Amino acid sequence: MADFLSAYSIQTWLESCPQGYLEGTRFGHLPGEKEPEPLLANDILREESIRTTVQLVVGERCALAASSGLINAAPDEASKRFLATQTLDEARHVEIFSQRLVDPGVRKEKMEDVIRQYANRNLVKFAEVLLEKVDKKDFIAGVVGQNIVLEGMAFSVFEMMHALNQQLNPKFAHTLSGTIADERRHVGFGENRIGSLIKEYPERRPEIERMQKEMSYYMLATFADAFRNNPARDEFRRLESALVENGGSAQWQGVELATMEPEEMETVLATTVLSEFKTRLGRIGIEYQSPARP
Amino acid sequence: MTAARKGAAAVEVHDLEPDQFLEEVHSFEFWFEAVDGYLGGLTYGHAPAAYLPAVAEPDRSRLITALCNYCVGETAALEGASGLVAIAPNRLSKIFLATQAVDEARHVEVFLHRLKELGVKDPEAEVNRQASPGLLQFKRRLLELVAGKDWEAAIFAQNVILEALEYTVFQSHARDADPITREVLQGVIKDERRHIGFGENELGRRLKQSPHIRARIGEVKRELDRVLLDAVEDTMRLVGTSADERHQVVRSYLDAVGRLGFA
Image 1 (cartoon, rainbow over the protein chains, first blue to last red):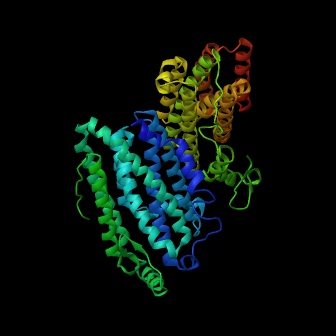
Image 2 (cartoon, chains in turn blue, cyan):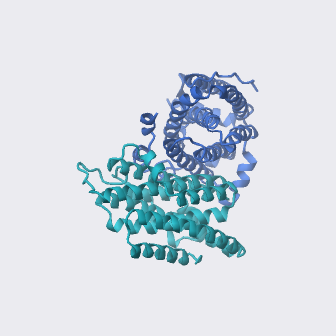
């Protein structure tokens, strides 16, 4: 265990993150990059961008509360130190996504109101299930919920958004690429650290499996809310058609997102995340539980 | 560090309006620029060295005792700062405390690494063996304040009492330390200065808005000062610090806390 944890030291983190892929960035993107004009000038797209970003802030605030809360529950020093780096990563994500609310014109003093207005209720419930475990200082359930379920979801969502925005919104794509690199590290820690603890405490499995099933349901419900009946559907279709007409592309998981209907994108995302859960949970000795479909 | 931003136009933070000042200095971006300046190119807090100069006995044993107790203090600070993220009243304080949590974790790591460099085979076991009971008592009390969601008292205990004392002790130690330990301590001191600044600013504003808090903080100070000062005196005696120097450290600490208005 000690050897694998040395790969998650502060020293490694400093070299790979602040002195590595974040070097020269400002709020996660290149200095001077701006949100594209067509997005800022179109009220429907602008509101949809705010709504989407609010979900990112809500998710990252949950991750910040969970990772900081788990430090005091961690059974060893090296895990505490890794979780401190994760805490700061999550705080950075809160900061850069909050800044992405300011960029299209949300005033700082109104930010909490905007977050309350747009926060998806299913995502809030998803966070509550996890934070209940953290409040109880339940390290094993907390790390599975945070580093496998929440981070696994975030990883795929960010990757999909990155693919969609790489050509349409390079500023946002750059912001996402740093967070994807962070999430990859977090998921890796979860898998590596928890496997041995699950072996040590096999009686914890049923409760953790229940938590995964519940969190997965709320995640799918959040996806359903985001993709079905999306008010910006026509605007997105117009932008994506223009992208394809100009020879652009948004490939992810072997499909062309730019030519897909939102419901098809929802299916690709949900299938990808659930399949990742199954693989990762299997590696740590947890049996994946299929959630109800919203 | 008063100016930030390499990637954009430099910002002179002291020229900013109070709200903008807080937005700037409590941000990840500010932390990022600050540590990049003094940690860039270092490995475990010091410049990579092909040859590590040996520390002769009895200085080596004394240094090990000191580092073990620094680890206890820094672990208390790590657990305190991370617990405070949850009860911080706003986004900026949460983000600042997240940067502090990683600073404290780094301090634990560099001190444990230094113990290894000094030939300690199992640094964590050594820390447990040499931990001062007084420091452990302080840690328990600090974490009780955090668990009790007592924001002002916990920030005072953590970012004023503990940080100011660490700052004073590390500064005193750095003056006489071997070159490697000195470099490690100097990086830590720079972090502690930022943490004290946060505590001073946060409590200063709250005391202005709600002067009745002062009595509660005075109570916490009376309770914790003694515990921590006794623990530091014990540790300094163990590491062979002279009585004069011990008194000087205690005086410097009391002066520092006095400057913050909590004499």
